[in-house]
Image (cartoon, rainbow, N blue to C red; front, top):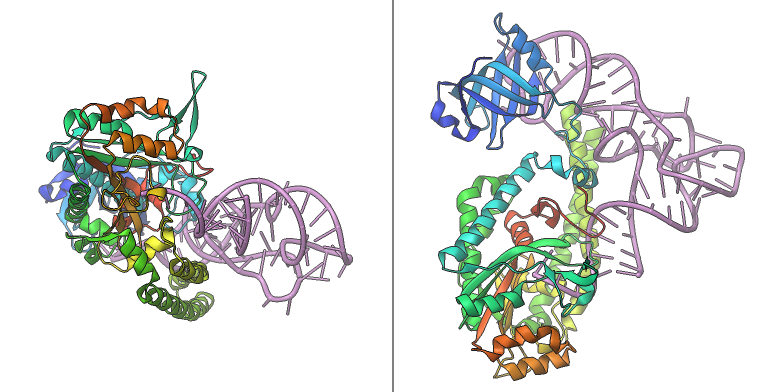
Amino acid sequence: METTTKTKINQLSEYDGQTVTLSGWVYNTRVSGKIAFVILRDGTGMCQCVFEKSDELTEVFDEVKKLSQESSVEITGIVNKEERSVGGYEMKATGINVVHGSSDYPITPKPHGIEFLMKHRHLWFRSKRQWHIMRIRSTVIDQIRRFFNDDSFILVDSPIFAPAAGEGAQTLFKVDYFGEEVYLAQTGQLYLEAACMAHGKVYCFGPTFRAEKSKTRRHLTEFWMVEPEIAYASLSDVMDVAENFICSIAERVLRDHREELIELGRDIADLEAIKRPFVRLTYDQAVDILHSDKSKTLLENDLKEKTARIEELAKNIVEFEEIAKGGGKQWKKDKAAADAIAAREERSELEEQIKNIPHHMELAANFEWGSDLGGSDETIISRLHDRPVCVTHYPRGVKAFYMRQDRKNEKVVECFDMLAPQGFGEIIGGSAREEDYDRLVARMKQEHLPQEDYEWYLDLRRYGSVPHGGFGLGVERTLAWLCGLKHIREAIPYPRMMGKFYP
RNA sequence: UCCCCGAUAGCUCAAUCGGUAGAGCGAGCGGCUGUUAACCGCUAGGUCGUAGGUUCGAAUCCUACUCGGGGAGCCA
């Protein structure tokens, strides 16, 4: 094969009419008697390469006919604008070099089950949907760094091996550290507070580990968290930063990935609504909402809507199955069968949700001041709003020892949880930190924390203590929310969940 | 820790009341010059998750176990 200019698929518009070479992998092929279409992907996009059989190209054509999915190839041809083709450009191919012929690629263009896909995560990346998600993840992470770097935050990463267990030791992973017991960190915050007193504005960004025995669509045992910490900041200062931060991520993703979001089925209008001011509620107000008719009505309507939807689905399923079993085009039958499966899945999901609604109503109605908001309570609050909601000033007892006691109401602390809208739930948790030595020590005693393990932390209150605060944002939950993913496992390259660590 | 659902061809799923194991995709072969999950014809492909039990007969019923999915609690 002749060598020509090498280029990438996302650069093709610059080479209209020219002969170039693309290097990539075969995504799909459609071969007819004398014409063959090869969808090539090269990491930057997809391009349809068209091979027409002619006397000069007989050998090439025969080779193309045998191409299998995910073979790696270099294809040379003339670039031309083509409305019928996916990216707007296609290639009239004249030559092909098969770098490596693949055979029996496991992931076909037809649907697969989640267990199978997870076992093939290393290959699943190549599929279109996963490809979009990973690109958006990369942008989100870039924007996270950019936001803080542009605002003069200093990156100070915290250790992953952490000595003291602190609160919630049962959710930490134990590690043997040369014969001593240490834990995988579940936050870098305490370390960051120290760095904050040196640099003023700092952040850390890395993986974090939770040994929670949760098997749900919202949980990972290993996930990424970014945590900023700011000196001389009040709770409201910290919330301002958090709100600007979320807006900047939403804007950036909308700017750079509108097409991908649409392909993922995300409602763009929902994301465009992510504008300041966000809603701020105190815990007391949130509790009032839970007790109010508004919550009751929401859930009652929910019950009605879901019940109606189930009836609709039942009808659809019958129709789909009739089409699938009856005569007609095979592809129509295939589609109907696939639709029937999807409808069944949606139905069983709705049934599960309906089953939980009475329980959620009860939880909300009987919610007692002093306990933490549960998942269903958060869902109610966030569903009542079309932009993120910050719930502030939780009771002291349900929050961590380092959170700043409200001087006007000592029963609560100056903290906030940011809930993503439309029922998605918590993506940020943050607070002002207790800067007063005596109050902090008293609180540690209440929690039975061994003071000797925290002497270094208390030093921060001994030498030039100032009001300060920060928050932590879960990258995967944020990405899942932005992309409208049903399950968090798609938001991280190699998900680690309870009982799952392959590949 | 608790509750619900599932396991049949490489993949996704069928199999009516307990009566000889089926289809599509993928693979192989053949056909087709504009396909978009292409299409059409043919071929190969099975220890019905494991171990017991009921029965003349079990993919189907019962029990236990294993693995997977979802949810509760807990959490970002």
